[in-house]
Each structure stands twice: as structure tokens, then as C-alpha cells.
Length: 168
Image 1 (cartoon, one colour):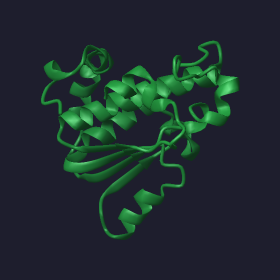
Image 2: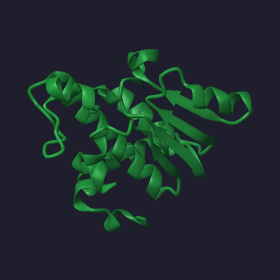
Image 3: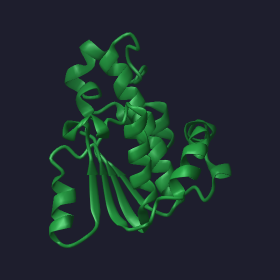
């Protein structure tokens, strides 16, 4: 869909252009060897299945340790590094933390179809929005590098209506 940064909608350019200095540094270290990267992998079922079949795959999730927390700069850089290590035609799988985006959480999060970003005064909503933005930034970079991107969300999720997700 998007062939270069110039083709991106402004909201996506706003997400990835500030990452260029980080990307330049990480590209010096990144070797394209991964066929699969699973962001917010939980128990890493997809990643482990591919590893069992002999493929190079990496999972990433804060439940495995604070080093893999995308809300922290080091964690974001590590996720960016793995994204840069994906081979052309590889797959990037993101399963956003859906607990604040689902129908059942709407009362506590303030999310509605008209206001999918929800209540910014609620810390978990704010963090989920940051995670969504950072996920889309990584997926955009992956897409520009000719990697297949997928986002997993329940049917009742409002995540697809958040502006950065919707534009992607």
C-alpha cells in the first residue's frame, strides 16, 4: 500500500519520522534473519510453533520481563530492533493488549465509537493508546520494508477505530 515515507498519511509520518535517529543506529546492528515477530505475544504460541518447525522467530511481551515493555524506551528500541531484523516477506504479528478496547471495559475506560481514544485521565487507557501508537509505528516500518503485517483484536474491540490504527 505505502511504498515510501512520502506516501504515508500525515498521522503515520508523525509516528515514524521521530524514530529515524534510532533506526539509523539500530540498522548498523540489525541482520535480517527473522521470518516472524510476534509483538504482545503472551505465551508466544505462534512464535513457539514456528520455532518448533525450525524457523527463526521472536516473541516480545512485557509479561516476560521489563526489558520487553514497549512503554519503556529500551523495550521500544528492542521491539524496533526485532522489526528491523525481519526478512522481506516475513510476518509481523501484533496482538494489542485488548483489555481496555473491548466492549466489556467501556464503562471504566470511557471508550466509545465516537471517542475510541477513551479517558486520557485513566492511566491504563493512556498506556494502551501509547502501545497502539507504538505498535502501528513498528508495523508501518515493517510494511515499508516489505514485511506482512497482522493485528489481532476481538470483534468488539474499538482499537480499529483509534485514528492511528484506522489510518494504517
